[in-house]
Image (cartoon, rainbow, N blue to C red; front, side, top):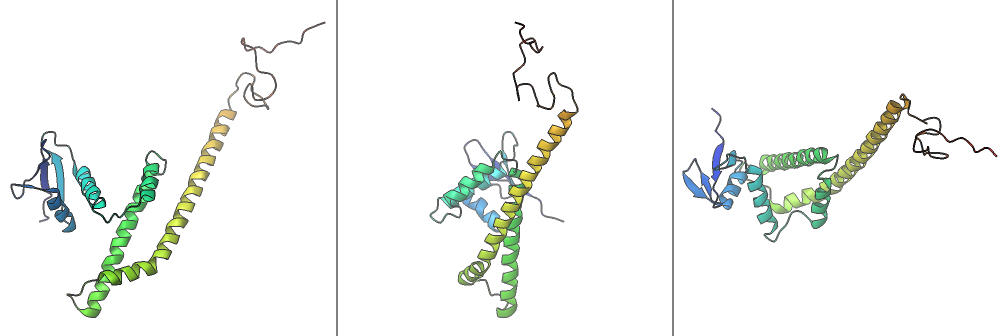
Length: 202
């Protein structure tokens, strides 16, 4: 039987209550659950609203303020610019897939180290740093190529949409619409009554 999701309730006084242990816990305790790959959900004790993402973001903020931030100001600025952008969903999925690939890569390296040095061996920080230094340029190049491809794809989609829009409206007859385009595009604009003016007779 699969383990049930651990339910944590958040009260108005900002205290977190672990229903499994029937005790109050801290944000640091929730962080430990994350590190232990535990399944949990944080909900508002009054409304039942899911607050899991909010709590995870609080943990990230505390970690970032702890003196060894993972995200640079430039990276955070770039991420903010994607909010509301047409590629927001695509970028979120891309980051998620890359973090998963990064984690899988770390796990495989751990398995290789254990196969050579024994079950109790762990990947040292120096070994992992050397591996990342070797893989870094390749990963950076891959991400750069992906971003360039994504921008081209977005531009092509925009051009295709514009073309479809032009083709759609070209089948309708608008007043004073001819080879010159919409009224006012070329020549004199129509009068307020919509009828062309006749040249004055002298």
